[in-house]
Image 1 (cartoon, rainbow, N blue to C red):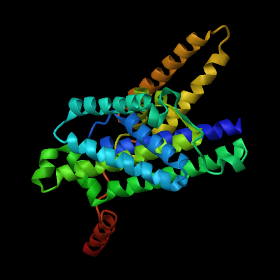
Image 2: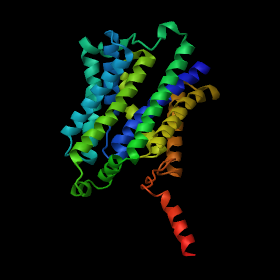
Image 3: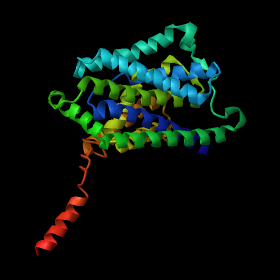
Image 4: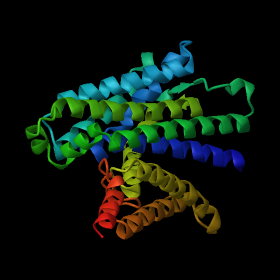
Length: 314
């Protein structure tokens, strides 16, 4: 049971990494990206192929993140003039193109049979429980680093400029912000985090196949960010943990209700997942941790200065 909980924690961390990547692209910059599964697949396949070729896993992970960032930056550069629904359609198509490429280019990806035997850190020297514990710790550390970087980005002048793009792109351009360059950079950074999520998945499960990267994954990540709080890195992590808890917790429903067939249990599970997520969004439309504007520089000292001024005046 403890090994299962550690595996669930790892998958929650992978979801959190994906939600953090989406938060940079959509939550902070306002660009709709429905191709999350595509960037997730790029990271997973590149890291798997490079590590199987004999490259150390950390270096393979960096190659995968660079590949995802490069693809993300290129896709963003090609779609700079698209907004709203049109950008969503193009990015959704990109995700499907990557999945179909993985399914058909057998010489590279082994097609629908997938790639197995992907190395994991110290997998051969550890018991399954020890490996799950180690990988859960690695995942938590990487999510913490990504969360910290996202938080620092949000309160930085660059992050404020990204939010200005999200609120009014034309006004930001009039104010002198390099809109095109910033959109490409934000998309590339978010895509790198999405690719890192794929790296974690590939090296934890040791097997990847095109079926893993279906658009349903994108929906779960959007739900994670929306439930946690769009534009908030902490909300992205909290939302991912909640969604993973609902997904895994609903598995036990089939065992609790007698005389329930497998198909009925699966349908009931989907109904429970959808109902709980609708309930969360009904109660908290802006997410459990709604975005709040960061405090401007000097805001902490201002009340103290006002108090001193008031004392002096009295």
